[in-house]
Amino acid sequence: MDTTSLIRRFDQLKNSRGVWEFHWREIAERIRPTHNQFQRYNVPGQKQTQRIFDATAALALERFGAAMESMLTPRTQTWHKLRPMEPELAEDAAVMQWCDEVTRILFAVRYSPKANFASQAHECYMDVGAFGSTALYIEDLPGQMIRYKSIPLNQMYFVENHVGQIDSIFRAIKFTSRQVKQKFGEKAPTRILSACDQEPDKEWDFIHAVCPNSDREYGRKDYKGMPYYSCYIWRDGRELVSEGGFRTFPFAIGRYAVGPNEIYGRGPAMIVLPDIKMLNEMNKTIIRAAQRVVDPPLLLTNDGALSAFALRPGALNYGFLSDGGEPLVKALESKAEIQLGVELLDGKRKIINDAFLVTLFQILVDTPQMTATEALMRAQEKGALLAPTMGRQQSEFLGPLIEREIDILMMAGVLPPPPPQLMEAGGQIDIEYVSPLNKAQRADDGLAIMRTLEALTPLAQVDPSVMEIFDHEQIARQLAEIYGVPAIILKTPEAMAAMKAQQAQAAQMQQLMQAAPVASGAIKDLASAQAQMGSAPSNQAAMLRP
Image (cartoon, rainbow, N blue to C red):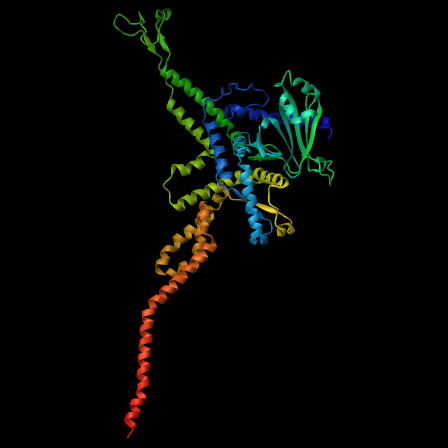
């Protein structure tokens, strides 16, 4: 592709989002100061908390990130599975074993120490809460599998396709002279290579562009035949340094909520930004009022005002008592209603915590003494409230992430070959999310089961047969799944069938053993009766003989 046109397009994207960056800068100054790189360059280590007078929003953002991770991608759970697209293949044991094995490999690679997925995903969730948009780079490192990197929003410029999906990324990135040599080797610009010895830490501006390959040559095995084109451009020298391609889009884009005709998302922080700014101003005012109460201004006489007055502990101030012993110095009494200000602060803090979903997750903590039905009702409410926002993360952020991972691992030969029956059906697989969010959404089923059983319990005392319409084993399995009980501690249906068969056999043997004395007595009586009946004719015959 033409280098000049790519640079021009990058400049257009950068200039067109100035309004966004103004909003993001206000948010970063008050909520996420470490990411305050919009329309400015901060020296590493620079103090950036001058505008924060109340930490409520910053703490709420931390909890929001933790809540997103715990509901979508908990580190200690399998939060998604793979299933064949064709329903009839779901009953095929070989296909399901392959899906389970691929899922196991995905989680092993994703959470390996070198992958760095968990920490970078958390950074993405924090960016979604603060700025409404985020980007995770899934890099294919030969010999090292997959490496994840959360890209700061100030470096990323999004482009949507005709269906509203992000299919192009322009990234502004800085490399030092040493990093340029490490990444591009002899392809690096001559000027930068010559500076490696003298200025190894000097920074240079580069552009990384990834977009659909409009000049794709089908059938080629190199980057020219790949669906996505990638290149690095040295910005200052306007020089194309490296070209490449991707089989799948290498960025997973997350957006909280997208407005009409907008590309970038709007997060909770943007919604309550006026409240965050007001909370900071109110807190400043209350701090000043409290300082006047604790350390009030002093009222002095005209004569006393000309003399030095010491306020340090143990200081001696002469001449500030009248002849009658009345003090000539008084503190200025402030009439400020500090308690009223504190109540106003609490109201603003509640609004901010609501926006970041803190109060929603605090319900279970504040009310630990709940019955199983009450817990299901809470989970149902949580799932209903979280589904619209977090469901978008699954479809737009996690879905492309998993597809990219599968492509990398398949090409690396790490995944087992698919079963022939799956390939004959087209090889299409589906992603089934089993995260705590999805379990909370399924709480409706558990609540319906519990309420039905509770309603039928009084009736069952009159007619116990009403409970026979239920499959009690399936009820137990459904509730265990909804509550998130580990599957490893549950017996399989085959094990349950074998156990029931053993129990039935044991019951039958017990019945036989209990019936043995009765049968033995019956046989003895029958034998005795037959013996008597056998001797009766001979007696009669004897009596009839003359």
